[in-house]
Length: 347
Image (tube, rainbow, N blue to C red; front, side, top):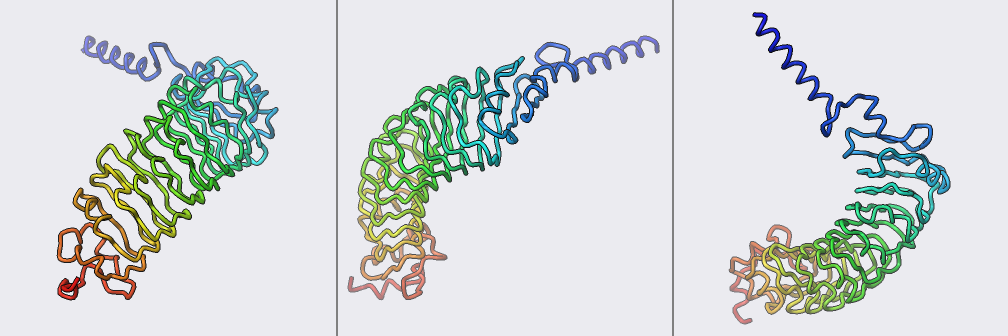
């Protein structure tokens, strides 16, 4: 019995050691706290952590740029942080150059505030660590897009809901997701995404986009989804959005589109094209049959479809199931899926 008791005691001791250890060292509450700067040195920012790999800083309560710079001039035992949060701050209008000192972050979230500009050297300390930058819901009118090429791991950047009025040519070998929606950009040049070979998802909805220049979304091997709804588009030209992979999606609802050109979405196989709530009056065979044959789903509901001879080719085919048969109606209210092919015998 004594042998059993000793064995149990050893097991419990091992379990306690495991529970209080991290990366091979004994961990105590005091040691975990020691990973952070002294609380009084970084006030009003707050440092928290579960381990050396999950260091977090919340600076939502800073009163100005000077206070933020003072915080990051303090002594930091660990300079590599997982996340910086500055949320709903109503004082910080700029991130000046060098404001974070030598402290780096994997994720930077400055959201819901009054931030107007970001210095071109403000994020230098995170060039080799940052994976996600989120600056949405601010008042940014000036952002140094040219520094994106300096980020070696950056996969996602969001500048949605700001005051940007232009989007320059971008350059990043790693960027996959771009959120630039809800800015009054007006137009996007054909060369904007040429330097983003890894781009997969582009959010450009509600940017007052007037036109799609052919080739803007071409030669992007990983492009999967493009959001263009709630803009001012009237036409979709040939080579509007080109895909190199299956199951892509294009969202074009709530524009003023009257015409979609043949070969507007080359390479699209499967996936969907959303064109609901526009001004389309016809569904020409040369435009839509190739897409339907490649398994693409179409949503033409909410358009003033005349349902003349232009849709005769579509009736009594399996393609009907791919065009949202429940909601798609003609201008006079008849459901497209219920039209009688015999009524189109003379077409």
